[in-house]
Amino acid sequence: MRDLTPLHLPLFVRQFADTSFVVRRPLGSVSPDTVDKRAGEIIGYLFGCYCSTTREGYIHLVATRDDARRAGVARRLYTAFTDTVLQRGATALTCITTPENQGSLAFHHRMGFTSTLVPDYSGPGKPRIVFHRSLTDGPAVIVPARPTDAGEILTVQYAASSCEARVYGDPHLPPLVETLDDVRVAIEAHTVLKAVRDGRIVGAIRVTRHGDTAEISRLVVAPDHQRRGIGSALLAAAERHLTEVRRYALCAGHRSTGHLRLYHRHGYLETHRVTVTPQLTLVYLSKDAPAR
Image (cartoon, rainbow, N blue to C red):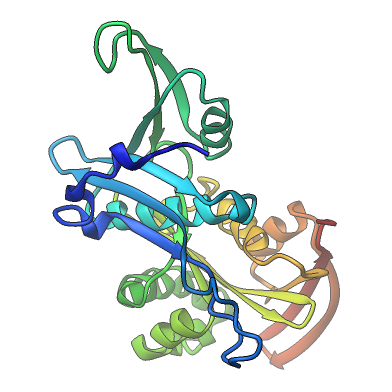
């Protein structure tokens, strides 16, 4: 409903094209009789840039078509931008809006931004609300992993699982025998979320949909970042990631007391146990997904 073309500066699709993103309408059916003629059109976009001197990701403009609102388009754009600038060492996100833009104010507050009204920000008599979000405060930033993250995720997985291996007296636990290609395939074929702090991957989790169940697995946190809430943040993010499921399911070794306590705190209940080896029994747990 607003004409945003004055804000469409060419530099955001030229010099800053690698930090600007679009979301397109799904292609849908390939049948000529049923294909949506609007398939592939842009339904949302974000223009942004990264400042290496301040380690700040700046969002210049984000917009979503009216008929595509409330579908998570803006959140997807922010996630893609955040992931990109985190890879470059960003420690904060910044953007601005006009004081009367209450929709933007509400959205950014939901996204974890703080806001400050700055008089004359854009010139005399032109106040702006400045949004700021730290990428280092709190447990970590949770974003989808990329195939190029496989090596770093595998390193965290080995470090975290080595501690578990000592508990079970077994150096061949499944997370310890995975290869780099295994992790890369998991990222490409399923959903792998990573926890990033100060530009470093410090945790990861996988979530896969099987019918009406979201199966959560491979929750790992770097040993030097454990007991900081990162495991809880990853688990909560995994639960939010898949919608339209009826339950969440996961498992842990019977001696993995830290994982079991975490799952119990999040409302998971034991369903059954399976003995794998004399040293390892898997405890299976599940909980109902909230109504949406």
